[in-house]
Image 1 (cartoon, helix red, strand yellow):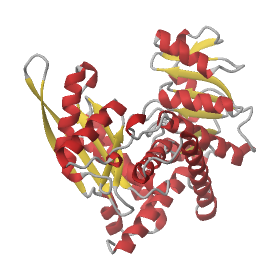
Image 2 (cartoon, helix red, strand yellow):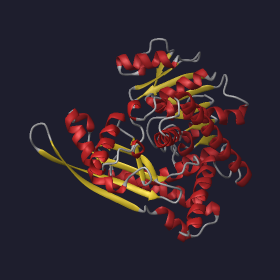
Image 3 (cartoon, rainbow, N blue to C red):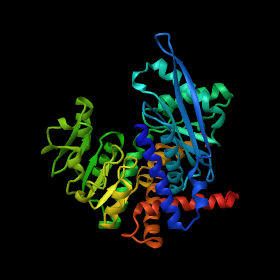
Length: 422
């Protein structure tokens, strides 16, 4: 993501917030109180490379709002990370956590680095160096990081261990998304994609009475896209098209998500799946005549330009911001239901909350119970947004995104008022 894209992401986040504030009838002072992060930490991370050089990396942690509880959000390692991007994502985490009724505020972290060119030792030193830069500002009751783009359970384990070395406090709940042996859950791997599938199923029940037999196209076949496809297939939907960065495949009779995954793992792309009827482009996938469309790859793929050609009646955002504000408004007025990213992709942070609770009570929650709790929470918040949308707003005039953000912002404002912050 370039600086221009990061700036656009922040402006989009501010625009969404302003719309929610206006719908709720709040003042400009409330908007400004919600827009600005409470703290942004910038850290310099010197790393001795394998060739003996000392290379300096830069990282950030944005702590946006703590009215509902400790900051919560992931840490990403990416060569295009900027401070503006981290601030915008921390704001989005505030609304996502509020919408999911979690006792968290919003936080986000990032280091400007391409982790793929680092050795394992260099990556560990970078991870520990980042923790040394932020450890005074985090903790199980203060700010709880987690994995994000290009970070992993192993990286979380190094960071947790560094926190212990620095503080003397061996608290598993300081970070979530850890390896199972260190208090994590295997369910974490499926959580976001499973949550997308559950949100799609619940919306389909409201629209058609169920998801069984409904056709689905999924752009992006990484972790989120694959598990969304897998679970929707198991729920009785027909996944007719999937894609990755090299293109997509289509079959009117339906695809087997596990077989497609095996081909992608072996060959590097879904386009090598031989049982598909034809290959298609990512752009063609978005415009297929299907019931449910899940953009689960990158941001801004549905815009004013291609929105008139979108045929799906239900769009479930598996990626961050795949539908622009203008496209959302156009499609919603046309009667298309769009389940927004802060709802559809909430499975990851819900699972983080389950892990955090389990760490704090001594490890009593089983994998089976974790998955059940995850599903129950996704069902509850999807139905809550649907109810708010239909009882407090006007479908057609207002989108499901308006409902989700309004409900989330309302909860944060009420928490700030109770604390005497507004």
